[in-house]
Length: 331
Ligand code: 8YV
Image 1 (cartoon, protein in one colour):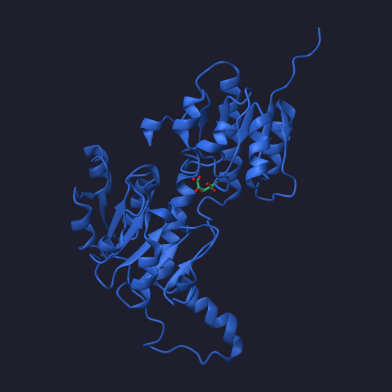
Image 2: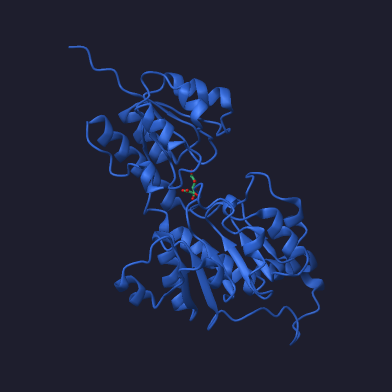
């Protein structure tokens, strides 16, 4: 009997070697060996011919593109937890299932968020830059030079108390910070108790009382510019903001303006509103620590994300509901 045709799985970016090797064993895997970001035509061509598409955050899969999907395309198995770059409703309407990779990047993203809080409050990048620039010409220690702020006792307001928000809260507690949060729904009392977290129904009120704000909610139509120019003005001038979620959640122009005018003490951003473009005004701000979307960039997370993608594809092809299916009502 002839062997059944293996499903064609198109992977839009270079994935860790072990993941690609396994995908090649299991599927007719079409890899992106030079890791170039797909343009719209390449994406449309991939969607026209594939059984399964494995995109990443750099692929914008909107309703118009989903219209171009071929008859064979039944699954979009996203490599990443955020699916704001995919029109899930349009995909589902065309009979295409969408999956993502939750859990495996939670701890690493929370680590990076904590690192950004430390970097901004203790001026890590500024200090490291001085040594790199001045080298042995650095004049040495001084009691009033390069002072930052203590984390202990500061109020941290987490916007979005999901997996990553909770993992951040655990870390912040270990640093002696007070944990506050705003979320669509109040979390279970046991979790609140474990994290000693204070719930704010009103985001406006929480913003006006915090020392540090961390954005940890998904980007959806409801959270676009959640931190609008009006809301940013509610922050105290000594406050800092960190964002490891999505740039679109903050009005980046308003943020850059407030930083430049000294109405905000600092920001730590791992994501940008018009990624990969970085707002030039942010580049001019001494008190902005800017990272190139590195939140989940560990060997471990990227391997486990790949594992999740494979498990989702296998379950789906075997006729089961994939474990990480995303439905529009979840967003
Ligand atoms: C990923 C992320 O690296 O998973 C996400 O949503 O933001 C990142 O940590 C990226 O999205 C991979 O597609």
